[in-house]
Image (tube, rainbow, N blue to C red):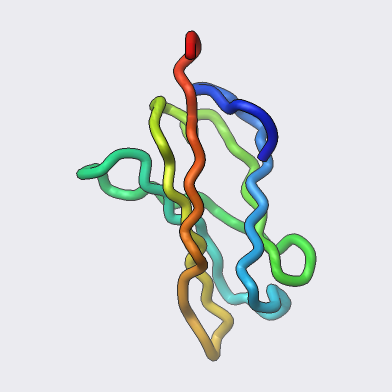
Length: 95
């Protein structure tokens, strides 16, 4: 992710190093908390490189100005778990 991101942006690539090899993944998603008290959103994630996952932001992903928390959920078939949590700010249009 680069620069300031705003509500309504699309096309941003979110790349997260999960620290485990991505070959042989049987499932991966990003769990995204936008606001406390709100249910987390689930965004699809696909392997990118040897230990990274990628998601390209689509319409509706950045729908509220807030500090987002993102965590990968991964299943390799023999192991399942979560990555570290990262935080990033989505700004309103006049911030």
